[in-house]
Image (cartoon, rainbow, N blue to C red; front, side):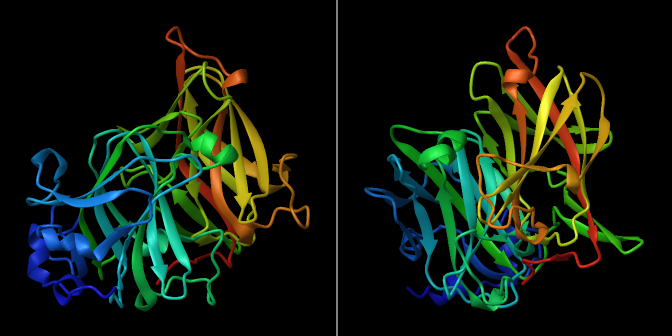
Length: 378
């Protein structure tokens, strides 16, 4: 389905009224403002019995007078897709959108090329709160079940936008990300593809001696670009030194509670160590897990004492294979890493009088050889 010309190409002047997720004067290549009822025709859902409409309810509109509303009921072992038609966005560098969900929702968003290869990012949505997202396309990573001939996102080949509710997936993944029942709603507004770059959560710099430091996430974007695991509550907090991620966990829930985020957009060839800052309100045992594209996992554990920030460095040689997964060569392959997972072992961690406690993390970095590069850059 080819989009109307008024949707595919937007005047630079239009973006001046786009809202807080897009810089004034940005060079817009495509925009979905949902101001007209016909704008819904460019989108479709793959969820059974789902309904797509344009809402005019001010409580569910972020910018202007209209927003896209998806009404659906999740089924076991099912997920939904909202997908645009064909785009024309050569030179694109960033994706912006506003999203709100009626219940806590693990959201996957991204773009797909004409050959079917998909590049994704993650976001945890709290109930009935608008989230204004502005992300570099270079921060998206190739989906684990996708192949791309050059392992890089090509902006001139982008043909669609994808939004998945990852609730109710089958097996261990579904249990970790959560289940939902009953009628659900998601609202999408002010979707913009721009030729201007957005601030990246990842940076690479040469630190000498043939080494490069990769900042995987310092949370200065103000958003947690990842998903909650096991019912943990995630929040971006601010103090004098900047932003950090707070993971709140409870004693009565899943044993493993934490946060998963993508690292597959950065080539980590020559990985030597992973570093982070962490603090805890109670004594806690924190697992740092590296997962390859084939699902094989390697883990290292940290024992955190209650108190202020401490710095931790984990050599790659200290990551042990997860006995619950199988690796074809029985070795950690840094160039195949897809996600990093931070997990609190609640069975071996203390909680406060209210049955909860907090672990905070910041400055997640990796030190690698000089071959490190951004993989997803268009």
